[in-house]
Each structure stands twice: as C-alpha cells, then as structure tokens.
Image (tube, rainbow, N blue to C red; front, top):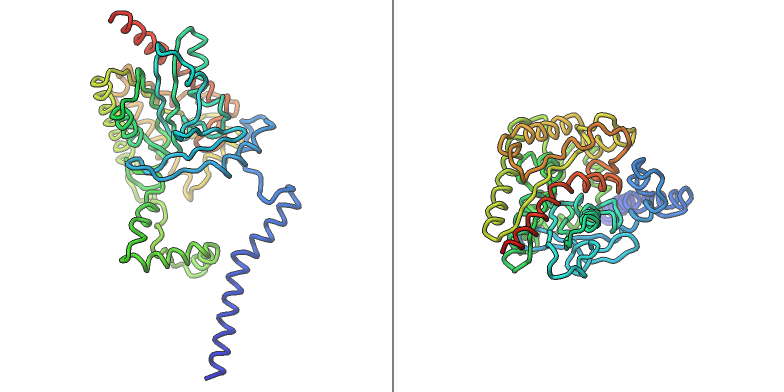
Length: 396
C-alpha cells in the first residue's frame, strides 16, 4: 500500500510539475526572450507598428497605455461601460467618456450633440484630440457654430446598446439637440461571433458566467477556476485529445460555413433598421435630430497594404467566410430602400474603397488620418442639422 501511495505521489508530482512548467515556465522563458529582444517584458503591440501610423513615435506607448489601463465594468441594461482613467494619450473621465474640445466650457446657447458608437467612435487607436467627436467639435467651431459635443462611444457597443443608452439619458433629463450614431462594424462582428443578428460581443462568456456565485453553480465555479488557472495546459489537452473540454466555459464561435450568410445579413440590417426607427420616435418625442452613419470596413477596400491584408484575416479560422458575411451585410445595407431613401441615414461604407494609402490599424479601427476623413464626411449632414437647430430656436 505504501508503494502505491509513493507511486501516486510521484505521478501527481510529475503532473503538477508539468502544469507549472507549461503555465509559468514557458511564459517565463518568453518573457526573458522579449526582454533580450525588445528590452521590455512584453512584445510591442502589432497595431502600434501598423503602416497607417507612418512610423509615429507615440503609437507604441499609446497601445501600452491602452491595453494596460483601459477597462470596462458592468453596467445595467447595456452590459458594460468604460472605467475612468487619465493617461498620457487616453483620458476617460468620471462619466466613463472621452473628452471633446470645449464640452465643459460651451455656453448655454450651444447646440448639444451626443455622439454614440462603439470603439471606433470612442477612438481606440487615436489620442484624445483625434477622436471623431473631437475633430467634429473643432471643425464645427471653425465654421462658426457654438456646439457642445459629448462622446458616448463605448468599447464594443452596438446600435441596440446605443438605443438603450440614449433612452436612459433622455429619461435622466440629458440635453440633446442632435444625436449622431456611428455603427455597422460591431453589428457585423457580433453576427460573425455568434451567428445571430442583434447579439452582443462575448455573449457566450456572459451566459457561462451567469449566476456563477450561486450555490447551484458551485461545481461550475470550481471547474471554471481550475480551467482559468491552467489555460495553456487546457489548450494543449484540447489539441492532443481532440476533446472540447469546455466545462462551464463558453463554446467556440459560430461556424459561418454552416449558416445562411444571406439570411443572416438580412437579419442584421433588419435589426439595425428597427433601432433607427426607435431612435427617430424618441427624436420626435424629445425634440432632437438623429443622424445615422454606417461605417466603412476593411473588407471593401480595393487596394489593401500588406498590413491591411493581415488585419482582414486576423482572429478568425475562416477569413473567406468573414469576408462573405461582411460584404453581404454591406450589400444588404446598400440595397435597403428605406435606408437608402432616408435623409438622416448616411452610408459611409465606401469611403475608403478607392484609397491606396493605408488607413486601417486593425480589422475595425482607423488611424487618426482615417478618423479625420470620417469626420469630414460627416460634417455636411451634421452642419445642416446644427443650422436647423439654430433656425428653429430663432423662430421660437
């Protein structure tokens, strides 16, 4: 019996040693290698070296700061919201919002513009003064308008979350004359991830975490803790055994090859169209002008640089299926009669189609020059809305 326990202890010890080596030894070796190669414990972010930055000296430090400190926390109804943070390149104030020029010094007579969107509106990849709302604030001021722009862009939010956010702001008495919505990419990305329209980013994780602290899910909690403590070991076991080994953790993303891409694209645009309808109803009831912009995406850009070709195929097992889905959604948006005929719905999906210069810094986000081009494309519609607000006030 003693020999059995000694042998068992040796087996357990070897297994524990193997797990420790896999989990910590490999990472320690990689960390040392990065210190020798890059003189830092982490590899420089790939996005920081995107050719769209044209060798900017601030991009590496920017992404170090962004990935180290920009975080979100749970918020009712919309799932998550950005935490306050003040850094050298990124500022998120106590409201969880990035600043815009003149927002807090605008006179009472200023036209109040609320900007909604995901990380592209929030300005991931851009310094505080180079987000789309910040550029719009400066350009409108240059045109002689007194404006107060607020950037409600939130990492990962889609048009449904923005609709809910706008409802809560209006219920709370927020002052709004114009509401700008900048969407499209997160609608496409969430459909790619889940295989459904009107889904959320990482929805499977939220489902796996639901009520995990309750007694009836205690077993799942322990299993999740063990799996989270040894993720590299688990990945290797999956590869060696071919078993899913998911436990309480979320399953893999949707397999787009098994889906009807055309039907999914149609459903995505239908949801988007219904969100626009709801916001228009709020606009009529609360007296503000809504303007909706559909975003450009890398898949339709004709002349992609080597970097952009790589971004297009990032983080997917089936880049061709992604391209088919994204292009199908864009085609459905362009073909939708109600959206095409709407004066308040502007399609910017082709904005960079003919650009030969690099403009994307990853699959979704633009360089600061790209943000400036988007803001300039938005400017005519927003300027017209500002002029309408001013005229309406004069007539009252």
